[in-house]
Image 1 (cartoon, chains in turn brown, cyan):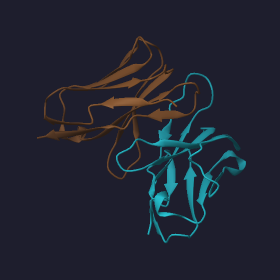
Image 2 (tube, rainbow over the protein chains, first blue to last red; image 1 turned 30 degrees about the vertical axis):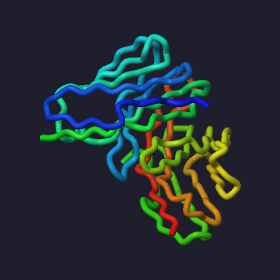
Image 3 (tube, each protein chain N blue to C red; image 1 turned 60 degrees about the horizontal axis):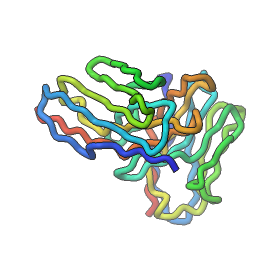
Length: 111
Length: 115
């Protein structure tokens, strides 16, 4: 089955720093989505990417759909304490409904 | 609140009991999904509805699990004869159907603890 490798597993950064995380797949994906999840809550959609090479921003967040369609990255600029949480990449491979998720990147921001 | 709504938020049950969870999707969304998430993992796909039709079930969904979506509106997920391994967060999501817009929006989840 399809697998997503997400890295790093965790990050500890100082407030104001930029952070980057990425996801790679063993197979081609048609869509990449990035979600943020707070403890005890459901994932919240941050950015959706639909075309290879696409670069999309949402405030301080920027994500790109890799040219090979097997990877994506998420950058967060000028981090703030409320950025703390678990960030998941997810993608649609052969189907356009079933999402495959990575294992998440736990982000801690020290004030 | 027009987001995906799940009930209950938390459920503690004894092993062997049956439990039922409810999901109310975003009103104009005709696709509804159930996912399961265990600690330290990303959500895993369980099943998917297009309106009232259940179109795919993951092999993770054993015979003890059943999901319905009568009239293509809310959905229920029932687990019979619960086992400790069923302890997890059960997430419901919805999206519009077809085309290139496949963005799934998740509810807050139901945390199941089987003791």
